[in-house]
Length: 136
Image (cartoon, rainbow, N blue to C red):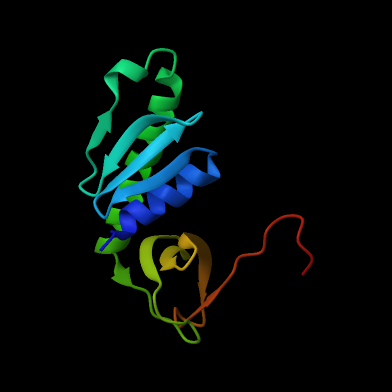
C-alpha cells in the first residue's frame, strides 16, 4: 500500500512539471525530460542516478526540496491533534495557534490542504479571516 507521503510528493512534483511514477508501493521515480532523475522512498530516503545528473543539479535540488518539505508537513499533520469547533467537519488537525488565529490542515482526496481561521464565540467556533481586497 502506498504511503500518503509518497502520494503527496507525487502530486507536488507533478504540479512542478516533473514526471513522477511509482516503481512499486515504496518507491517513487522522478523523471526529467523523459530520463530518470531521482527516486524517493517511503522512508524519505533519496536515490539518484549518478551517471545521469550532470547539468541537472538544479532539478535535483528542487526535487530534494519538494520531498523534504513534504516529509516535514506530513509528519506535522500526523502528529497534530484534531481540531474541534462548532460546525467544523472531521479531519482537521491543529498545526499552530497564535493570537486567536488557527492554522489547520487536513488530508483530502486532492492531497494536503491548509487553512487559517480565527476563533470566535469564546473559542467555540471558527471564522475565516477577512482578507484585504475581499468584499464583506
